[in-house]
Amino acid sequence: MTAALAPDLAGTLDSNITVVPPQVFRQLSPVLPATGVIAIAQRPQTSLPEVFNNPAPAPLVLLENPRSHGNLGAVVRVAAAVGAAGVIATGEHDPWHPSALVGAAGLHFALPVAWAEQWGKEWAGSAERGGRPLVAIDPAGAPLQPGLIPERAALAFGSEREGLSRELRAAADCCLAIPMQPGVSSLNLATAVAVALYAWRLARP
Image 1 (cartoon, rainbow, N blue to C red):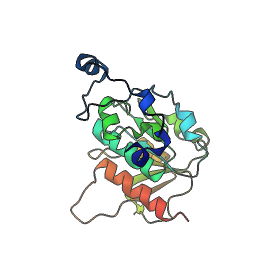
Image 2 (cartoon, rainbow, N blue to C red):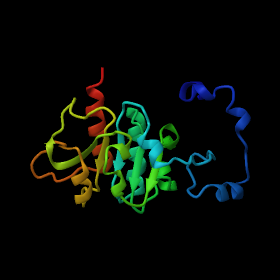
Image 3 (cartoon, rainbow, N blue to C red):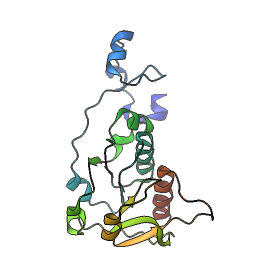
């Protein structure tokens, strides 16, 4: 099983497994998994400048005030699958909350994930974002198509109910909209992120 699902751990996993009594297991895990297995790892200390200055050509995902830890985790999972440069979340919901970690299937450790309590005006300039163009994903934008997302973009997504703030839209270098059928006002946050990231991926060689 290890060789098929995690070949990089083959030969070393067994030596790092410890069986503990049920009461100890309950103390170690804030959310008890049905598998009866948990992994204990140290949370990386990732700063916003580190994420913005990632030299990778892939876009990073900027979530403005997401309303659900489960959605946050699903976004991290999608971003890791596509190969995004990182995820930044603003607002009161910590992307490293246990519920977000469960939603991401542990993929927080596959890419940089950072948290800021609010959208900062200090990010408004391209230089402060590590040269990344800011792309607002908003219904008022031009229809999203493969090839429209610039290299190293910071893709900004708002919550399903409120969308992006006026300040963030004003700071954006361009605005793109996900085409939807009439009568559909919004998508689930993780779904919107997946659509945008795969539109970028389709344009890659």
